[in-house]
Length: 258
Image 1 (cartoon, rainbow, N blue to C red):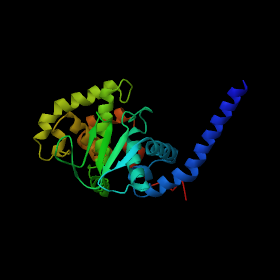
Image 2: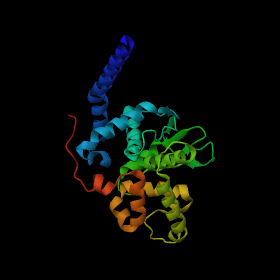
Image 3: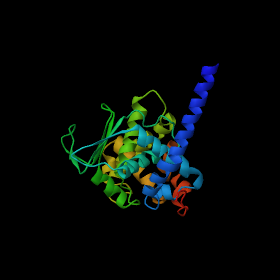
Image 4: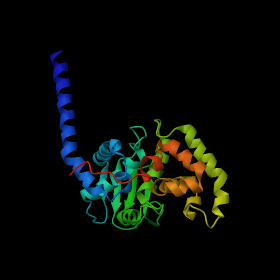
């Protein structure tokens, strides 16, 4: 009995310590990196800001960040990467992205050891690794409304693979089937359309179609809904969030931290 009480007290103290550390360390740090710079975060309603920051903190602590080619990975860089992951899994099951263990970051485009070609980023499920080039990340973040975002693209690949390879739930399987049926039906026709909303890269295969769709879903939700209303609704069900209602039509909120 006494041991159980001590264990319960220790757990309460640890939770209190974690909350204080978040409130006075991680929360303000992440806010400083993101406020007025990361549209998804700055336009979230107040009720979701803390949830988002806690989830970003969890990704920051969970992943093993590995620098390559002498890049210096700063706290800000790791925070930005972590926040992109949090953006996608904000309403998904808790285990989402836990299949992957490491995030490797190169300073520039790099030669992949798998394909032996230049890459901006890639996902290796065999090694449980997600790879980014910081140049590719910076290019994607330079315009957050052009539908090109390397962070969202590679994390979308990771989630898609995780859903296929694991026995725990990442996405609702019925909704995944809707994504696949839509893509199979439309890809051949849309690839011939020079004026299509998606860039041509989306039509290489199902996985690229999904990743490009995710980029546009979060970066250009209004245009996406106009151009591909059926697919927009499917992705809103898949990620359990509607960017237009959640943040895209909202003004930037006042800061939580000073």
